Length: 346
Image (tube, rainbow, N blue to C red):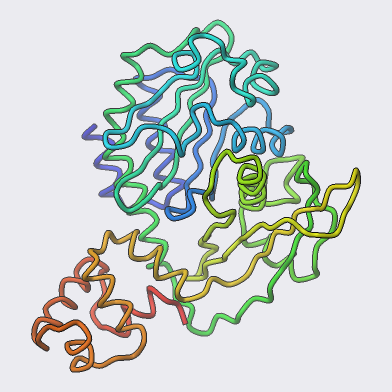
C-alpha cells in the first residue's frame, strides 16, 4: 500500500503510473494477462487503454463483447467500498454466462478474470481486469480482498494523473482541428472517413496490430453505442480524451440513418475539439472541486469581475478572493486567468 501511495507522489504520467502499479500488484497477486483502460469520469467510456493479452488480433470483437456483457461490467462493480470480483465467483463457475469469455477468452484458455473499478464521488477513473490462464486456477476470495484494499489509493492516483493532463502545455497558439467523421460497420471496421480524420487518428492512441489503423478510443466509444442500443448501459456514447499540448478531443458515436449491408445503418464516430463547457466539467472532477468552487470557476469563466462574482454568489468580495486562493492552491496556479485558461482552454 505504501509503495503504491508513493507512486502518486512521484507525479507520473498515467501510462507510467499504471505500469508501476501493475509491477507492485504482480509481486503479490499472480496473473497472466491484464487490461487497464482509464475512463471518462462522466460517461464511463474507456480511454487511453493499456493491455497485455494473448488476443490483440481480436480487439474489435473483444471490446464489443466487453461493453455488451453485463456480468462484472465496470459500471456495475461495487463501489464505496470497492470490491474486486472474480468471474468464476460471480458466475458460480459458469464462466460461459459472460459473452466475452464464451466467445473469446475461452479460446485462449483463460480460467478466471478478477475485475475492479476505480471510482470515487467525482466519477469513474478506470477499471482493471486481471486474467489467469490455463493451469493457474481461479482467484481466491483472499486475493480479491487484497486487490480491493488497494482501490482507494489507486483511484486517487488515477484522478491525479488526469488532473495533471490539464497542466501539460497550453492551448495558446494551438490551431483548431477540423471536425472528423469515421463511418464504422457493426464489427467496428472502418468503412470510410473524412480527410480530416487522419490528423486526429495520429493524436489518439492507435490499437495494436493488426488494428493499428483505428484508434482504441474510437473502438470504445462505438462499442458503448452498441451497449446502449442493447440496453446494457445508459451512459452517453462519448468521451473526452487528452491528446497532448493542452488539447482535449470529444469523441461521440451515433447510429446513421442510411442503410448499409444486411439492412444495418453504420455507426458514425465524430471527433472534434472539446468545447470549454465540456473541458471544465471534467476539470472540476479531476481537481475534486466542491460545488461552491465549481460555481465560482464557472462564473469566472464568463468574465465576471470580483464585484459581480460576489453579487452572483451572495457573498463578500473578500470571501471571493479567499475562495480563489483555495482554488489556486488546489490547481497549482497563481491567477484567475491561468485558472480559467487551464480549465477551458482557449
